[in-house]
Length: 176
Ligand SMILES: Cc1cc2nc3c(=O)[nH]c(=O)nc-3n(C[C@H](O)[C@H](O)[C@H](O)COP(=O)(O)O)c2cc1C
Image: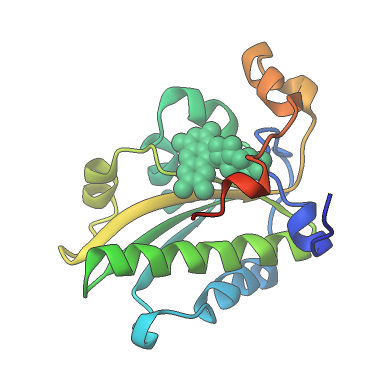
């Protein structure tokens, strides 16, 4: 396997988060700072975030917008981050938001944290619950926390947690 930086090599998306671990204010701020410094088309910075710490109102509202099978594990995440984009061309803004979230996830890895992104959530309900302005388009939720014990997960989720991670071979990615 070709070497990549350990920050990327060690990143993965767990479902077993430590239900007792919290993020410090400094850690949460550093995640947002990493996202803030992402590049964007025309430096438009179309990303917007709502960050909830476990059991605060924002966290609860984000959690209940997730499907029940994802709530099962996401409720153990210390922080839930809603990623949204605003203004400009929605496709370009979504690309920029994705890049900002990638920065956030790499920063989380650098802090010894783990992150698991989701796009399957009730966007309309969450928009209403968080009273988001009309021009803000919710797109993604990222659960962040410290790694927990996979044996606490229900069996179906534990299988996912321990399954081999796979990727397409590099040569199949190249066009032409
Ligand atoms: C945009 C995006 C949406 C995702 N949506 C979900 C989701 O709805 N539910 C889920 O369990 N995982 C979700 N994931 C996590 C992916 O399934 C995971 O990243 C992928 O299987 C690769 O595994 P790895 O992150 O451990 O390398 C999502 C990831 C991304 C980047």
